[in-house]
Image (cartoon, rainbow, N blue to C red; front, side, top):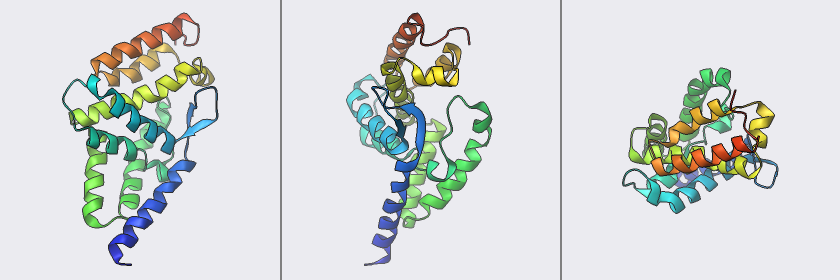
Length: 197
């Protein structure tokens, strides 16, 4: 076995650890907390299904790879809950260190390629990154919606915060932001999302 395939397989095994990083969002039907790998897979499938709603033409294969790799850094950095303002202060530093360690397991050309895709996602610099962020917002929203807003309730999150987070959907898809707005208004009307927090 040559050095290249050894590095590729080492990386493939390392990212298996993403299955052990549990998020604050629960599976539909009030299931257990989802893990990062499930979140990424679900986002990638949703991106493919919903690609027609992107604001701009996109390379869907690139979007799907972005979705699949965007949380690999959480193997080291841990999941940062999107409404935890204190944890978000150190998120970039933690994730940058993780990015360097984990992607360095790969051959140099693949390290450069995947690092560039990760950075593109983080910088919101392309239509693909913007649409991937729309999926990163919509995927947990659909789960929370299916669970009667139970994760928002558990963390005392109100509509103002959720709308703030979901505004990041607009650069990728105005249409899906409209769908999001409809979902949130329904959750507020049902009493699952306080609109005064």
